[in-house]
Length: 592
Image 1: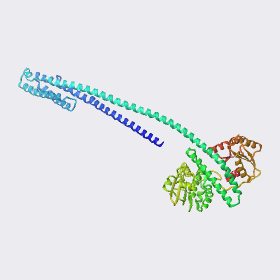
Image 2 (image 1 turned 120 degrees about the horizontal axis):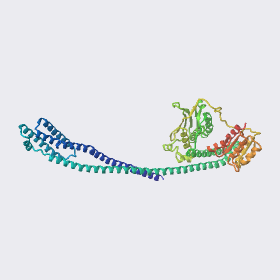
Image 3 (image 1 turned 90 degrees about the horizontal axis):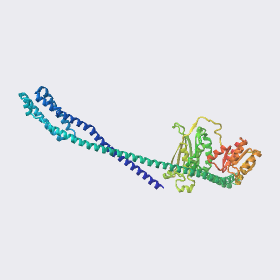
Image 4 (image 1 turned 90 degrees about the vertical axis):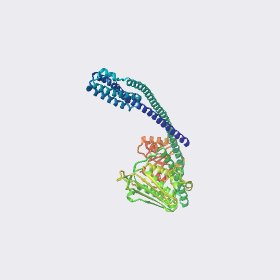
């Protein structure tokens, strides 16, 4: 595929170069002939005109209207004072005209030589005539002695006229031919360029049509992939809910330390599997450009507490230190952004740091950059772990790829965590810089340009998240709509500790009937059920009761699914597999 693409690109470049060369060649040829036409026209319109003007002037001076006329009058009337100055002047003007004509290539030099000899004879005859007049010789004798003959001069002028006419005809023919060639070349070049433009227009049109088809196919493929991932997520989460829910119940009932540790390991494996599923879903959203960010008010307090509780025990089990450095003022400061994604970035980086550190420890620093005009939240994670080589650093943000295969075999993981982290940081307009040395550890700095608030616009922003135990819900009725027997067993086991009364419905129709027969204090509604879905059941309940808390229990946790639940009237949702602590917190929040 890559070779075909490279070949097509080279062909396109070659065709483009040929078109440019042909265009340049035709343009230069056209310019050459137009230049010849211009030169010939200048010669024809300027030089020839001037030569003819001088030629006519010369004819006037030499002929009977000029020198000859005045010379005859001089001989006849012998009025030297009147005619001699005019004759001398005519000779000077004739010589000037001849001198000017000598500068033009068009005038025949042979003709000019003949005319020069005639002019010399004119001068000699003028001098002789004046001498005879001074001696008192009669006009008849002077006329016989001075024979002024302009035949040769007129013959030379006539020959020049014929030669010039022939040359002009030849020049006109060449001018017409060159103009025709230049015009033809110009028309051909224009037609070629128009043809090339038409060809490339249709090629471009076909390319756009193909691109549109490929885009539609890509969108269909992307949608099919998203649907597949959503369905697979649902199918994996449903049995995982049974495993994780059962383990959570078993964990709270065990007393032997060895059994508790065994179940804890199993729960940790479940949560690891859940993280892999979430990573794959997140990455599919990034690839499909469907991952969007929230812009809400949040405090760092809850995030830091959660980070502490999530990773302190894990670090302790590896006998490494884990510290979080943040000043009190910043801890309680308020920010605008997506707290879920900020926490995800922080969790991914800290999780990696602890995973790859066996000695020493991990330190998290959170501070602001005061040198910037806008607020910049800086997250710095330093560890003394195994570090990375230059090659490992270059592969750090590649999807499904880790520093090397030994990392995957030793530590596990999908290789998606850092790719997702990089994409999230880019979406938030931030940057990440990683410095690492093999055997010495890794230093990661993340800069997020978030908006810092001076005061809160909401109440109870900084409420502390505490571990919630099973709330006392005695004398409260909870309607559970769930068709899967394992999920019913898990939810029932979790609710047993609340002492609440339970009503079980195995499809949407039974859920609506149970609601109408005895209005519960809260409804836990599965989404995918036979006969009637949870969404349809919720919409029917909302037609009769707008305030009853209805919580969606679902393995569909894509953002568009959650938005659909909100639009259908669900109060909240709890994703499967169900986290017991979160589940109890939701019950406490919605059942007063």
